[in-house]
Length: 449
Ligand code: NDP
Ligand code: 2IT
Image (cartoon, rainbow, N blue to C red; front, side, top):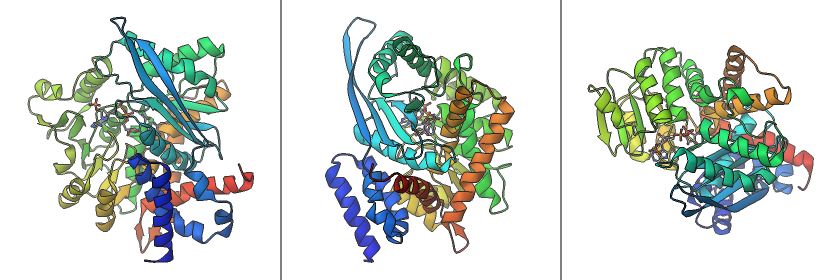
């Protein structure tokens, strides 16, 4: 073992010992430390200032009770969290996730990834993440509203437009942000940009709903261009059927690609004819208004098949966009994608590929864009929403889209700068190092805080 390998193993072992029962956090830290350790080893100032030790320690963790009354008048109790991970380069920024699988460790992994992702965006945003183990599935609008109001009744004292600016993530979209904003304004007696992903009539930005999915496709375009290829004409598999998946399909259609799958936790729909604009509009209504299951697609469009309990990765494709959740692409999924001729994976979700799956993609030298680079379009437009709110202006859609495309190009260029080796771009290494250096230098400049 080289001395770096030993040092990395020792560092990760200490993180594991200090943060028991947080496997997703360990996984995220391991991947990043593996990439950035050589940079740290070569820079005595980083070592003396214990940058890595500070990076894995959240600046603040807030954990609270969220009591609410269901439609039957029964008491319900959930646990709420906000991880304020790192504010070296800006106020804490990152989404809120409402899902029964939410734990402290899941949110710490997401907050940790967010620090580096936000650094890559070129904007001034620190990293945070929050949420609750509340399950929005099967809840009425009024129950979701009462939950959001109770959640904000505690959270409001910790957030603010210059302090910590939450947004959406799994289970939190426009409806939830509306309820959260209403309660914040009521308690704080302030109308400001404390949340992003707001409705257009109360300070939201055009293109924020589309931004993550569009950005993941823009990132794929940049990756493909390095090999003289383009998105047009390619067959694409997409997982998930929520915000990110829907707008990934929309942008793929704009670019002339053929998306053929969507999924949810029940299984995958495969539509060999392609999911076109009309079918996508039906999916948006199903998921965002009627809040149904993706299996219904196969009833509505009989040429499509529902693959119960399956993920999309066994389906032959040129491009893959994992856009559901963490660890949804394992080693055998990655092998199947490569064997079927997939040339490019652009991650809309956060850490959707297991470490073993990542190894398969890197060994096959396909174009592999990790989430913290490929899905940074969402938080980037959140940053643009903050700028618009601060200036009390609203930019036209074309302007936001132009800025989003510029940011995705710049993230790609940064990944290439730090990740190119022997004519191959290792986007994992590139994204980790590029994100890290900016935060590390800011921490160095700010002293022992
Ligand atoms: P949504 O809640 O809109 O959609 C989530 C989708 O993923 C649903 O189809 C859901 O299916 C599926 N899913 C969630 N958990 C699981 C699971 N454990 N197993 C299988 N399927 C699952 O969330 P988003 O589209 O906003 O988020 C998707 C991913 O993108 C997440 O990883 C998120 O962190 C990431 N992301 C989101 C951004 C944003 O701007 N929204 C920005 C950057 C990244 P079901 O309904 O069955 O649960
Ligand atoms: O993972 C993410 O980047 C998000 N869920 C978006 C965060 C944000 O603040 O817009």
